[in-house]
Image 1 (spheres, rainbow, N blue to C red):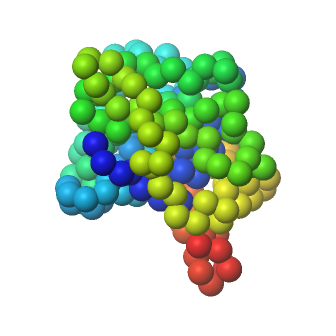
Image 2: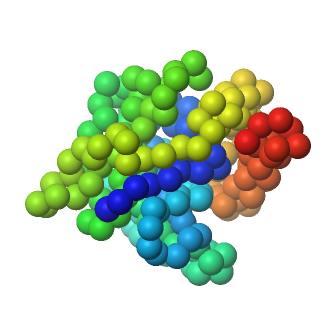
Length: 194
C-alpha cells in the first residue's frame, strides 16, 4: 500500500462521528472515487456503527447498502475507520484484509491538536501493523481542522447519521448529503478556507 490522501470531507465526518458518540466505539467505511493507481485518495466515508461494532448481521446489511450506493455514485469501498471507546486504546479490531485501516486516536482528538489524530495500519503477515505516519497526507490540515471545529462548536455534528441511527429511524439519511453540503460550503475557497 502506497501513500494515502484523506479529503476534508472524509476526515471531518470521521471526526464528527467519534465526537457525536464520545463514550462509544465507532466505525465506518472509507470511500474513493478515483481509479486505482498512484496515491489512494479517500474522498468520503460512511459512518456505520456506534454500538456493537462486531454485530455481523447489521454490518452485512450496511455493507450491502453502501456497496449498492457506491455503484450508483461511482465510488468504491477502499477501507475502514474506527475510534475506540477507551481514549487510550488505538488498537484496531480485525476487519478487511486488503483495505486501508485508519484509527482515530482518542487521546489526540482535540480541536487544538496540531496534527491529524489518525493512525494508519497495514496488513503484514496476517497482522495489522502501524504504517509510517508520513504515508498519509492531508492537504490544508489547518483549514480542515477549522471546518471540523466549526461544525462541532455550532452543534452541526448532531446532523451526522450513522447506519446504526438510520436503522433506528429509516427516514434519517445515512449518506449524510446535507452534512456533505455543509462541509463543502465551509471548505469552499469563497469562504476563505480550503
